[in-house]
Amino acid sequence: QVQLVESGGGLVQTGGSLRLSCVGSGRTFPSYVTGWFRQAPGKEREFVAAIRWSRGTTFYADSVKGRFTISRDNVKNTMYLQMNSLKPEDTAVYYCAADMDILNGNSATHLVRTWGRGTQVTVSS
Image 1 (tube, helix red, strand yellow):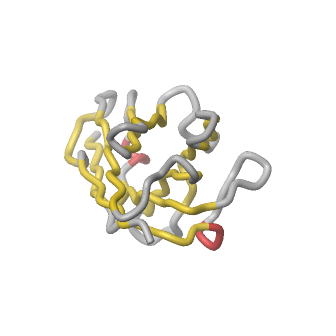
Image 2: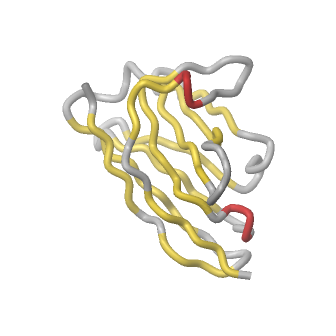
Image 3: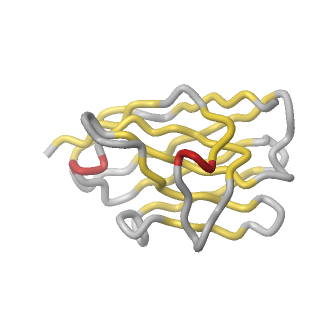
């Protein structure tokens, strides 16, 4: 089973940028679909983005399209989420996910089998 460790969260002003990283250990990613979810206070965890490692195909939630970019580094077994034009509503704990399924270009928590512990992203207005 792969272990996931996120990093890169922090505090940023509206319009700013952050890059999250997720390193996998114990198993290589290339056979996976991996992605990012987020959970804001008092809300359910929601899908943000995913990438199919074999072809680099990407998937995004409508709320982040055009602002966030998911990518991967096969050599480093690391996934990234570049977040630009951040908004206060992007404030959440961001979780790395692996061994997950994509349905109709989207995903959900019950389709994920491995989670990281999360990293906090706070966007101030």
